[in-house]
Amino acid sequence: MTPLRILLLCHSFNSLSQRLFAELRAAGHTLSVELDIADSVTEEAVALFQPDLLLAPFLKRRIPASVWQRLPCFVVHPGPPGDQGPSALDWAVLRGEPQWGVTVLQANGEFDAGAVWAHALFALREATKGSLYRREVTQAALQATREAVERFAAGEREAPAERFAAGPPQGESAPSGGSDPRSGGAWGRGWNPLLRQSERAIDWATHGTADVLARIRSADGQPGVLDALWGQPCYLGDAHAASAPTMAEFAAAVPGELLAVRDGALLRRTVDGGVWIGQARRADPPGTPGGQGSFKQVAAELFAREAAALPERPVPLERAADEWGELRYTEHGLAGARVGCLGFDFYNGAMSTARCERLRAALLQVRERPTRVLLLMGGEGFFSNGIDLNSIEAAAHRPGDSAADASWRSINAMNDLALAVLQTADRLMVSVLRGNAGAGGAFLALAADQVWAHGGVVLNPHYKNMGNLYGSEYWTYTLPRRLGKAGARDLMAQRLPLLAAEARRIGLVDHCDEGPREGFESRCLERALALAGSYNATGELEAKQARREQDEAHRPLAHYREQELARMHRNFYGFDPSYHVARHHFVHKLPHAWTPRHLGVHR
Image 1 (cartoon, rainbow, N blue to C red):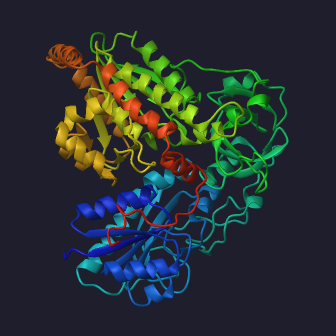
Image 2 (cartoon, one colour):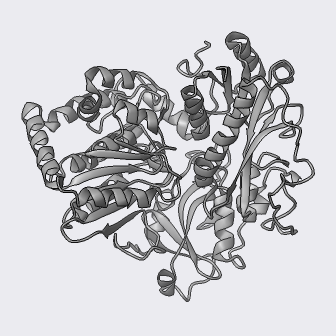
Image 3 (cartoon, rainbow, N blue to C red):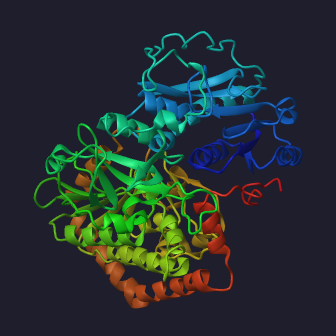
């Protein structure tokens, strides 16, 4: 295969774009990235980089004809062959499709209508659009993109003859049809328009839990489902089914009624049960004084005054599988070789001050259990992405608070959590990365004795992309311990995504699981049980304790924290506003004015 020069053109460098970028680079291709800012900018990028191929994994506009007419352009569309339109995955989730896919097609003058170079299909889990996008869509996109790029690199210049225009590929079934927005239709369906709020709308008087979940899950991330809380228009997101025992307490409630609070989520009655709503954003008209409509927040925090009147309904760490909560603990194995699993699944991996405090309290609680190995199981989508920038942005709108103060509280809470992990001396601690990890979340993982990651995980172990933050979470201790001083310096200087396999090669990760994503948790548990029952487990634990004592005598952890926080204090309170500007742009999803130079190497 001939290595190619590939220009990635994308609306933003999102999780899918990062995975494809890192995988294609690992395959030997030369890549550069251009954010889709304007047609003239794209034309300039092509002229500067002189690519063999343009790849568009995430766009919201057409590629200009001046580019696709002169240069082969592959578009990665999150739908099966024949599907067209800007809301492909939204429609699939809303309709409850049993199967969906990703298609790589060559750009022409129509949306998603070019010649098909490759495609891949997958079963559609009952999950949010964002969860599916980060997992099944990304894996299918990688499979199809590899196939298309390999064909092109081998010298093919025309797509395979089959166009799948008349139906599904041979041997693949089409879903059944119907007229309801949530019912199936013909394979691919042709053009599907932008999914409108009227088609997502919830009728609390008639819709059951499954229907409500489908609507909110189809709008996960963006745009959310337009509804109202306490009579105030807002967009809802991050919904979870409530258990029957929970709803038994509220049997007399009417559909649509708000009933309780748990982990910042609001419990709302449906006609046949209830849902926990974790995220909301106000639908304030543009320019509303004090308006916070342009970014999501924890629902009970956005409506703090109203939510304060609702009863709190916390749940124990050990509970039934269908009882939702952000934290969960399970225990496995025989006496003397027990393994504990402390799970935490925070929306988008964001670690607010309150979440850090709850997770630390849970860690201190489960440390009382007689386990030899304790797994820190991050969320399915993200292990952690560090401090919660949305909650920090919200503080800028609160009287008597500030974004700088909220940032300081958050980073100290993250440090308290990391310290609790580092100081767990009586058992082996393992961070299990089921999903991606970035910034402080990547370094929180390093506080454990070992880090295990699935092969599909992408890490961003750096802080610089958020306004040149220095970073904390004891990274100046844990990173050189793994990579050495020179390796740590080099890693922190770069700003590019890192595949789990590469992280394993350099020593950032201890184990990279290349098996299917399904069953990863079970394989990690088996591995942990073997570790807990191994003949030399006691020796490993003693060696760990000796290293920690030696390290503390050489330089106390308090010194690392003091030095890191001195730099972070300048980021938060100093004269350079870079962090606050970057945070504001990130939270409000403001369009990029230029492509960062670490991505656009052609510049």
